Length: 423
Ligand code: PMP
Image (cartoon, rainbow, N blue to C red; front, side, top):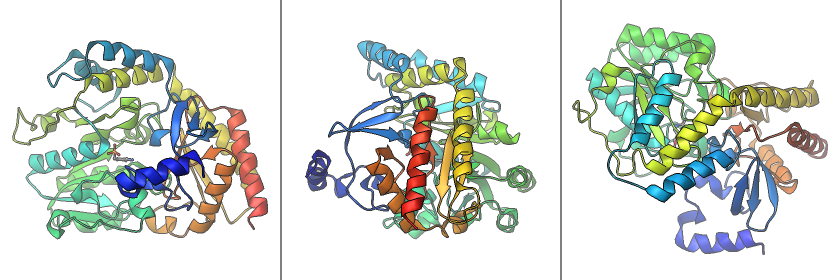
């Protein structure tokens, strides 16, 4: 029995399923989960002391690699003066300034502690601003686990086969309307009654594997929102700073009314944020009638980590590096799989997905055509070769500027071997 098995057995006694977030249990790919003790650069070290090449990267935050020295130093320095004030501190302004200066259309921003809080609060704000209750989300987009958003979500919710969740009263999802990703007609048919407060989406979806929005689709959503008086909310918790130097909004040349952020802006500490149009944000308490709050919101340790992560990202032009690395990986994989009909690969910036199907999916239904059993075998094969993938076909992979071409060669030769052995 390995040390991980040991920790897992003990954890299962006290923590449901032994994990604090379901996908970590490896349920979709079989086998017991690994437990880790260290994360550095592009590698994780398991409790057994084995190094794994990491393509999870904490599901997105670690765009500089794990534990970059400058972020470590910033957090240490902040810890010397305060963990939490429960009151305001200048660091909140500093991160707000950095983000609003960097992101076009982000006029005001409020910090929370997770992506879930960011999307939940953005929806409430959109409702408060427009005076309408309904909103539209897309099948396969995941926006965290708040009740109204756990409808036809991707990510772990798909992995576990629950389109929704037990414990969510019907009334809580009665105002959630779902449309098909990359299908404008499915959106307009809902909008026609004029009851929609907002459309929320991942402009580049990462929670059904990597499925980018098509340009006409994203542009069309902006037009439809204007036409029907709904706010457009880009959930960029995952894709900001990963599919573009700044946001997916810039990638498409479309300005949403509200953004949601998380992951990279917290540098691995718990941070989320939502923001956008000033006239909309001013509806938030204490200025306006829409209530939203948090004991640890704007937490100084988290702010210090986020500021340094983002500063280094922008200063060192990390986007250019991760984008080049992504393209290099893409070239290598495309070369290997050229002419095959059992597997396809897509990459955008520092995100990528290998789908076990013939052609790239455009929506959740098409992701459903993948060979999930084969993905599970590929996951295990990679693990044996000391590569950690996100443990589900529904998840995007992440790389960082700490990854190297040598790492990619290892991934590609592992894939090559797998495709030979697993006919
Ligand atoms: N939105 C998106 C697009 C996400 O990918 C996630 C998490 N993966 C969330 C929201 C929720 O964020 P958190 O897990 O921090 O609550």
